[in-house]
Image (cartoon, rainbow, N blue to C red; front, top):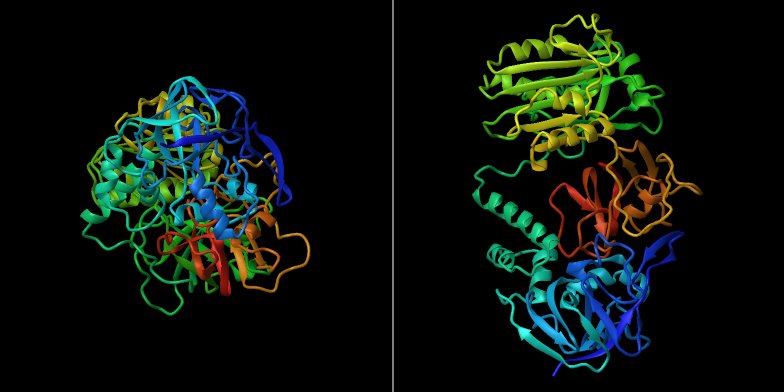
Length: 579
């Protein structure tokens, strides 16, 4: 008969870690006597990161004494105490490969239901002093599992554990864990997992995404879209054209005279710009030309104090050579027949203008809404081009907002005075069944998202292009006020050159950092991570040039053209990352 060996609780606290502070509840300790199991927690217990731990679906974490013995042998350690793995219930029995999601158990006065495996988390490695623990829990098939409280009541060490219900589907905790974190997953098992009502909503969402991807791959007859060339190649400037105050368009041809591969509307080029500084800055710019155009065209705004943009708009001349990575990006038009909203502000017009070219070139009969915000007519680049393209589309409407123009000074029958705001967008009466493509400053895109969802659009129908660094994901870290990205303090490195393209930082890799993630953190480059051991893929990053070596090896390799920065180091002479 399975039994409860220990009830462990602990409130979250600040813990020093790698010169930072983590707010975590992973430190659990045994409790003598009965403890009340409530709907969202045990009395006296708490979690620091409620996004991944705690709450109704993860009220209680279970770990087995058999797994304790396994890890003691694996690490050659004998210092483990109950609660060491962050679990609330240390149990004898209930192995992960036998317990199924949806199973119910009575312990003392309370009844519980199994909802999901443990979430991979770097903090259990903190507690154990074993940094690779998150990956080991998955690869050794010993994650432990969460339960929700079906009936509240007191529990205590020594209570028997009685199975009261067998869950549907007969998928064990081990199998469910492998479906999310390990390769070669079976689509039929994903479908079976989605039919288990007890499976937590977060895991259901992840499985739906995996199943959708698997179905798309199975039904697709087209080869996967790959970069048109590896690394960087030379492109020669054929023309520099002023478009408006502070914006110039630059046309680029292959330096060797060959024809450039076609790019998709909405994609971007990443350029290394030798004449702009040392080391040569690397920046990304949307293509503003029609799909399939040769030469490529980018349109660049001269930013105040912008080293790269200043050179490109003021000093670049025809005949100059720039290094370019292949066009990339998934901010591209979806193939459907519904209304399309092309929404932009300022220089954010460039990718949606390329989409407008695609619609016009294809004589699309879709309902097309062109919605743009600029400061004034003088600062509205490519306006005449957009207007001419819209005239070719039978179901188009144009709405331009000039924030600094007077009510009678817009000079355009399609323009109004005032900022393109969420209220202004809502007043247009946009169709709720549309697909939206939005590009502009981050605050603008946030406003547009609010307005679009308020107008009835589903979030999945709203697509964005963001050239700044993506928001960080750093679970548990507290007091994080980071400066602008910069080269790392202290002695420089002697390893391969590492460029964080979105952040505009280039620096040699240093032996003091074990991974690309650690170098990014030393440069205050916004980074996204969770497990830090190659399991969760939160840190997956597009690599524009270069190669890496992994240590530890990820449990599932990332897609081609991407790397996991949490467990990789650069090899060769250079790596350029899209972050």
